[in-house]
Image (cartoon, rainbow, N blue to C red; front, side, top):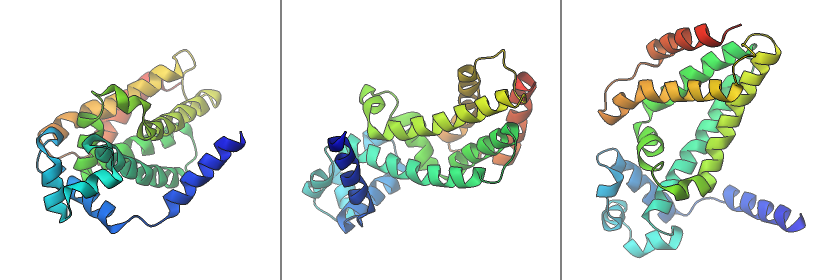
Length: 208
C-alpha cells in the first residue's frame, strides 16, 4: 500500500511540474499535423521538422510515435474531464445532467476535430490502448455517466427495467454515431441541433 501511495505521489509531482519546452513543441507539432493528415501518414522526422527539434528528442520524451499520440490524447481528456465536471455543477436532476453531458460531448467533437479524430479513429484499433493510462481517463468519464444514470433510476426519473450499462452504451454510442460522419469528412457538427434531437430520441426510451 505504501509503495502504491508513493508511486501516486510521485506521479502527481511530475504532473504538476512544468512541461519542458521541447515536449510542448513536439505535442503541438503532432496536433498541427493531425489537423491536415492521418496519423499513419505522419513520420517522426516530419514531427521533429515541424517542431523545430531533433528526431532524437522525440524518443527522449516518448517511447514511440504511438506513445506520443496517447500523451496528446491524455492531455485533451484531462482538460475535458475538468470542464465536464465543472459543467455539471449546480444541475439538478439526472435527465438534465444527461442533456448537458450530451451537448458538451457533441460540442467538444464539433470544436476540437483533432481530439475527435484521435479518440474515435486513431487509437481504438490497437489493443495496447485499452491497457494504457489514457484509457483509464475514458473509464472515469464513463463511470460518471453511469452514476448519473443510476441517480436517475433511484430518483425514478429513468426506467429501472433497462440495464444502466445498456443505457450508458446507448447514450455514448449514439453521440459517436451522429458525429462520426462529420468528423471523417470534416463537415459541420451542430451541438444544439444534434443534442436536441438525440435527447428527444433517447429520453423517449428511458424516461420513466
